[in-house]
Amino acid sequence: AAGTQRRAFEMTGTDASECEASTSGRDWSWVPYPEGHRKRRGFIANYLDAVKDRESATERARYSDAVTKALDGEAFAELRRGATVSFDPSDHDLSDAFLDLIDTSGLVGGDDDACLSRLHERLPDFDRGKSHLEDKARLLAPLARPGPRRDRFQNAYDRLMLEVVAPHFARGLPAETKLLYASFPCVRIQQPCDFHTIRAHVDTMYLHPHGSLNAWLPLTTTRGANSLHVESEPGREDFAPIELSLGELAIFDGARCSHFTVANTSDETRVSLDFRVVPGCAYDPDANISRVKGTGAQCYNVGGYYSVAEKIGRDWIKTIAGTPSVRHGFPHTNPETVEE
Image 1: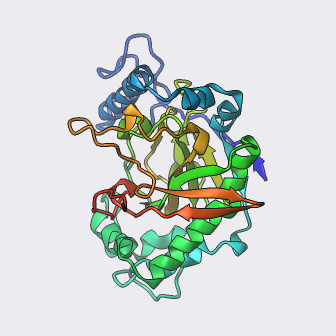
Image 2 (image 1 turned 120 degrees about the vertical axis):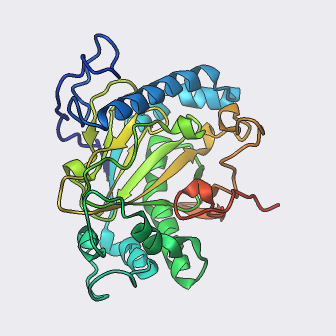
């Protein structure tokens, strides 16, 4: 069942009106770094870049008349407001498939230690002040290698999309019979650390269209500092963590709402999947906003970045399979291609 996304607490901090990176008269109390912190200035600058891009994307975006009508409609506006969608984790083996896929050979401890939230304790020479990028690269390398174990993970992901995510979108758009979705999820590991790992941004900065909505699915419980922080509406700046338990995923308007991580001051690692979903009525294959600057090439294509699910009878069926690429995030490095 779908519900309203919970917003747990307001971020606190020192007023930044004196900060060199601030704008006069603006309230920066939500910024997760206090005045004088070496990362505060850069964090605020990144946020201002996100605000600027959101405004620019709104002005420059051009969509077909049909897509514009869908984006302006109340049904899509309701989907944009966000929701928490629940499912039975015992019926969807994403966590088990993920554990079976990753490379744990470089970790300390036995293979029977499968607690993802304590993953950092098994990293060699774990240090909160380090990024541990090499350790993460080793762990996640199998995601970019085709094979039976990746097929199992892929199938678990597709099944969740068809049986959980697609029905949620169909409840909001009863006439919709087609959904585009990222053909492979982006996997994030945020170990306890002294710094944020994802800067403040909106997804139009990465050429995602306005019809794209974000699905965020943690494989560990998320609370406070180990979660993703999102504003409830574009420009509202009421940032709060998405707090979920196993068997829950969040839908939010990541194309327009700023989001970021903070320093994970907890003692638990967060492992999460994120992917984008576009209702068929909101997809324009020729959208100018998704063209690469310089070449004009269209990115986020059906059969490349996107797989397609269609409602046939009472069931959602995957009818077109995309291909994992660099646009699906680390560790993929191959360019997006579309099979002719």
